[in-house]
Length: 111
Length: 117
Image (cartoon, rainbow over all chains, first blue to last red; front, side):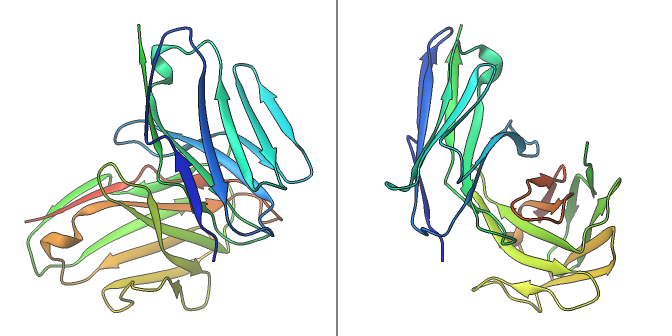
């Protein structure tokens, strides 16, 4: 089955800096890669996703890049704000299958 | 947007009792729902896939007699933790795809924090 590795496990940045979280996946047939943000005690919220026919996608301060050859994808957050502090999960799936999640990255943005 | 409602949001029960958790899709129909379990500071682990009108599919290592899943309608799936023990204490989250099509996002319920004393 699919295996998703996520790094780093914790990331601390200053407000205004950029943050990058990286994930690798094992199943070359995976073709859907969402990112979720989870605040403490709350549900995961989809923040951005990318499909395998696209190499990069951007939504305001958030961008995701995908390298199918290397089987890795990354989340980029620019101009970080304290409210960006949360746990971020990457995930991968193919077709109609469910998602396999990475272990999560706790992002701490200091004012 | 697609809304998945989960109830209760938290529950405390005594060891040996059973607890039922409901997951509803409020504005869409879901032939398939997914149940996850999350321990503190850990990732989401898929427990089972709930299929409307048929038996759930359990992941390896998940006891089907312990975690009973019923998906009786296109908008409701239930997870019953039977004879709960302290080690069952966890955060349980359901999810579903609003768009049943290929590669569509999962929408999550608000989760249920179960504490077994």
